[in-house]
Length: 208
Image 1 (cartoon, rainbow, N blue to C red):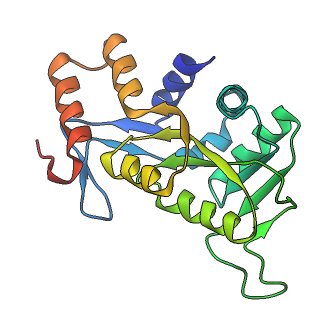
Image 2 (cartoon, rainbow, N blue to C red):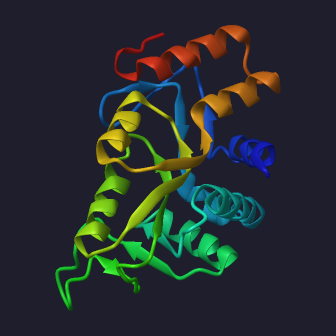
């Protein structure tokens, strides 16, 4: 597993930026000490290969019966392709909504009601977009057995949403793991580490 190397590269290339003293403001208005842009991972061949191999290993272990890999458009699509190639499995991808022309498809690729689908997204915050993709597959008769992602914040809202949807979720990396590694690497002080933990516990009311 390449967890340490992946996190090191995410920090080095500023795909993940941790700034406990000067937080970011999200579009929702939430203050956050972390900013991520996992779309940038496609530009780094070594990094994306490590991610694909680790995601493939995770899926083989967690969802050994998987027969189809699905990508959530757009950011999850390339990673799903690399994982499907690694596992030698068919692939599909799911749009946020059906096309407004042609056959009006929301899902591209083929699967049957007997297939067991695992959906991949790059980042899971609340789980909203990937769980909408799950519903789209189910509407078309697909059996989604689980979801995976490169990273998740593991926020309370996400946990609640996956439980309510009765959907398994297995991320490759999480916010708590990232913090632990950065603290052990000496990149975060104990005070910064504790401050970052408080955001995770109650992100909507968090302040410095």
